[in-house]
Image (tube, rainbow, N blue to C red):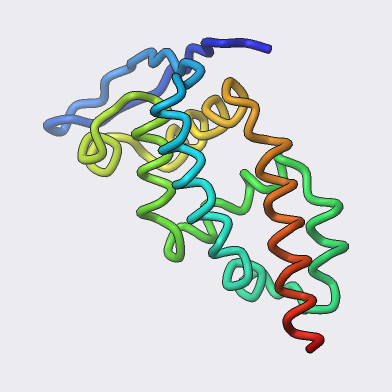
Length: 145
């Protein structure tokens, strides 16, 4: 597992495009706790996200079971209006950038590259899928009652 992943992105400042290489590092414990809290907020939006994707309640468990990290990352652009703040916070925290800089200077395509690197170096893929499955199971059991 990589502990540091370098990502080259384009940023836009003062009407000028600049290329920048950002080293996404495995988060130390304090930052890791903030990242996991923010990722959990993102995952708590899961029911609304699945509704927007048109996934029926009865199909959600199967949908999530078959969901790979690559597919999940592919849904991010469509779902940003629900979870934009959490997504921006994850990118800022995970890449050690200022939140305003992420909001104002980094485009969606490059934000996704950074997000993918953050997930990879911090081993969040497995954790995110497991939390998503647990959340869905809880929601499903509550709806059946």
